[in-house]
Each structure stands twice: as structure tokens, then as C-alpha cells.
Length: 106
Image (cartoon, rainbow, N blue to C red; front, side, top):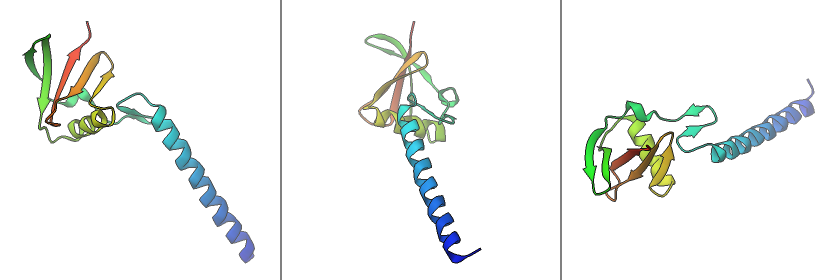
């Protein structure tokens, strides 16, 4: 293969990688909270939740959990200004940035 052909294919490969990265970024921005185009980035059901009582009624909470699912949920909540809906529940991040609350929708 002549040298010019190799350079052409290298440039074509690099351009395709840039297009792929741009498409992935756009798709990730369009995905619902807590998901990615390839599926959920975490599973809220794998997080240990404790029943709690607040001024607006019962809810569940978790805090300081070092599991990957918990850490990914904290990061997602931070990216959504500390509040978001996932499935049939409303999730929020407490001011301490380590406690997460969730209230199941009726």
C-alpha cells in the first residue's frame, strides 16, 4: 500500500472517532437521569435504604454508602442540582452531599 493510502486511512479513522464521540455525547445528554444509551449507569435497588419520617411524611434515605451504585447516584444528583425523578420515585441530595432521600410516588 503506498504511503499516501495509509495517511488517508489514518485521517479517516480519526474523523470517524470524532464523529462517534460527538454522537455519544449528544445521546448521553438526551438520556433520562440515571441512564446512558447503553442502559442504566447504576441500580437504585442495590442501594441500602432505611425508612425515615419527615415533615411531609414517610420517605427512605441512605448515606455514606461506598458502593459504585450509591456513588453514581450522588454524582447524577449533583449533575441535576440535587433533585430528580427516576422511575416511580423522587430523589434528592441533602445539604451534606452524602445523604440521599427518596419518596415513592403514590
